[in-house]
Amino acid sequence: MYDIEKIRSDFPILSREVNGKPLVYLDNGASAQKPQVVIDTIANAYSHEYSNVHRGLHYLSNLATDKYEAVRGKVAQFLNALSEDHIVFTSGTTEAINMVSYAWAAPRMEAGDEIILSIMEHHANIVPWHFLRERLGVKLVWVETDETGDLDPQAVLDAITPRTKLIAVTQVSNVLGTVVDVKAITKGAHEKGVPVLVDGSQGAVHAPVDVQDIGCDFYAITGHKLYGPSGCGAIYIRPERMAEMRPFLGGGDMIREVSRDCVSYNDPPMKFEAGTPAIVPIIGFGAALDYLMDIGMDNIAAHEAKLRDYANLKFDGLNWLTIQGNSASKAAIFSMTLAGAAHAHDVSTVLDKKGVAVRAGHHCAQPLMAFLGVTATARASFGMYNTVEEVDALIDALELCHDLLG
Ligand code: PMP
Image 1 (cartoon, rainbow, N blue to C red):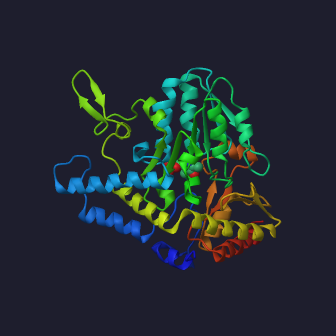
Image 2: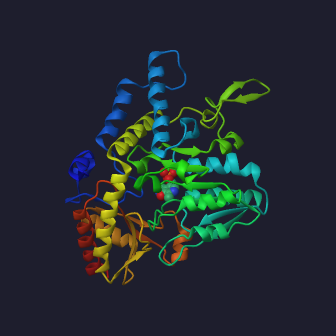
Image 3: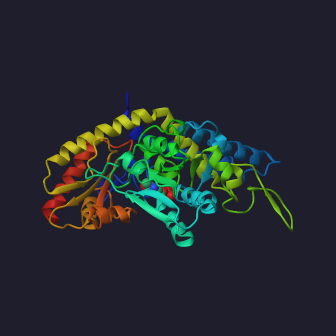
């Protein structure tokens, strides 16, 4: 059984009030709250187990290294990667995709080569590719969704040409909640020899992930959306691709030897992890992954699907509300616009007065906004601890918005 009361009690912030009202936190798409076990793990690591890692030769450094390195195995388990050696720690998805752009893509692309992107991508999976467009003359090829917000895998595969060097696509849209069939895309792309990068920032939060089953070449996740600390994340990299990558950032830890005239590099994955990493955030990230795996991503997915269906039912009765994208299998992420030209920022301000936290704006997805013909939406994004009562609270607050602003 999914013990929602127990889960809620694990997150101390959920019992606070905001503007005199119980907090209804529906901004999980931007960043999720942290369970007590993550907070305690961080406090314990700083209080009793802190030192730099990979420096060895004293007790605390070995202890911190063991705790830190154990998380690599947890990430591999969470993503069902074959080996922890296929996992590189990053500061988050943004750094992960910039790493792939710089270390893997740039050396093997030239003017006229093509990268296929969906119109739903977050700027983190757009701007690193624009860098290659600006610097190398690489062409960005955009694939649009249908009117429900679904992305047809065949449309992505049809965009492949002899010049296609990479497909970079999100698994779940942070704006529409659309779930993309990244396995079908990868299978078809590999038949044509094209590697696939999956932005799993949202996908890994809402359902189990199996990178071996998907078959993708790169799969990026970010700790703070997975109920862990900010400033940490990871990327799964298929070993063949990892072997093709040049180093990314240069510095300590990523080298084997440095002399006046030359440098040799550490073995992967360390080759891609320069400098002192986010030691304690990554240890906290491990606690978050344990927490999620303990509850079970299947159970979380089933709970969120119930919230999605209940919210859809409620939204259906509101003829002044438009939900952008209504794909049947979407994650519980709803981008809303209100009739009567109430601006998304005004909507979020009124909601905030009722204790309901949503995000308003372009959600770092401006090409999608342009495609949808809107400048901003108010986005309610649900997480593992949200309830049907909170859907009701959102609806009540939206009705107030409609009365005040509509
Ligand atoms: N991709 C998607 C789909 C996202 O939702 C986000 C975060 N909003 C990112 C990438 C970037 O993640 P981060 O800022 O943690 O690097």
